[in-house]
Image 1: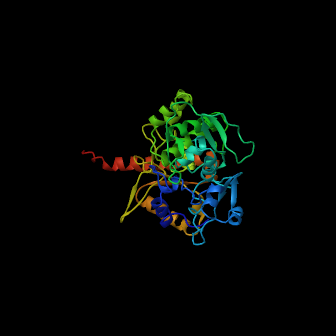
Image 2 (image 1 turned 90 degrees about the vertical axis):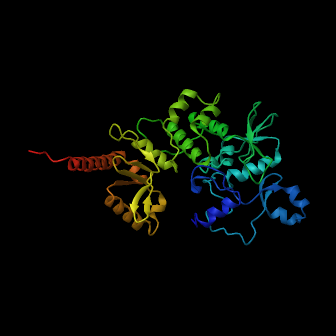
Image 3 (image 1 turned 30 degrees about the vertical axis):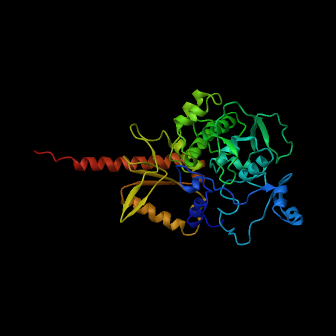
Length: 368
């Protein structure tokens, strides 16, 4: 998979390839380094025709120059940036958006294309590019062509791409609304685990909003305002009550939704609570109930890597020594809700017993 983080993150941020957002770098898209350009532009710069003809052709009249030989390609943040699986396309949605905009530079980027430009790393790369225009344009029947939609008068726009300063896109709030519309109507889907009491499309909508919180500085109020006339306000208000500014991955969102009603009355889950383990060490579980001393972690695939298992075991022991009940959840356990709930209820019971014992021990002794 290659290196992921550290120097590579910092270098990408310095180069302007990471959009501002409230979440950590891994929750935000890193823009690709390969920049498409018009074939005529390449020729005008003096590049030999035979060389230009050997480059990758994104669409008619647009080419993608190769990387210089000294560019590091070992990092997951390398030439293609950090996004999602672009299947069925050969290139990520940022590269395709840039290429198609070069042919229609009066258009405004919208939908999932705009969401990616605002930093969303998930779900967009498998979508077609959406361009909004005041002119009537024919949609390209080929899979690499843009989908054209009408640009409404007064639609607010911004220029989020540092490499294409003149490329206009809808604001993050408008992009969120346009994406949510496709999710709620079932036009955009992806696999989600079963969440009791929720439709899959609503789970996806909450995952999307959580992820958009991370890669932008949008608030629930801004999303609600941007969705006016695009998404049902009553539905969106209900979904926004289920969102969280601290969920740093879509699977963390699912975990939170699954366990949302499992705590005793008067207690609630909180995201990204820092727990002091002593000796200057700390940990931040994905969900926690500090009042009960329960910490939940979602273990992604990187927890299967060599050395990570030992680290997780030591962390688990330190949490126990600090008086916390910790529960680690992976994809397999999340798919077995009966087992997950049994383990969670056991952790809650033990936490309550510890606190009840501490309360009894702190009472003054009866004086006879």
